[in-house]
Image (tube, rainbow, N blue to C red; front, side, top):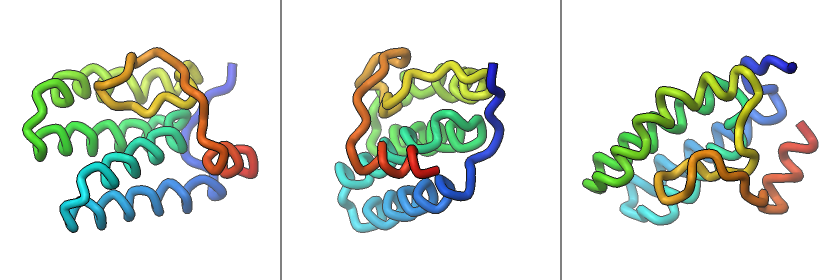
Length: 120
């Protein structure tokens, strides 16, 4: 079993770029684009406990911001258990992390993200 801890440098820059894009789009009121960047950050960071937990925290905050009880309620267990699942290497690869998808279902990864992950 592989134990994952922190993002490799090759992923960290892309993860941070997605979070910066999320913040920028959120501040501009482009909520759908902001959310898409959170989902991309989730896919990049989901194997790493800190990154995974951070994205779910931001998703929970976003749920409060848009006043979505579904997102808020859906993020609480993801926030609690996501980092633990990452730590032991048991994540549904490609899952975008929102409450609108089953938490344990794997999803196909977009080509550009797959390239980023493979290169790292």
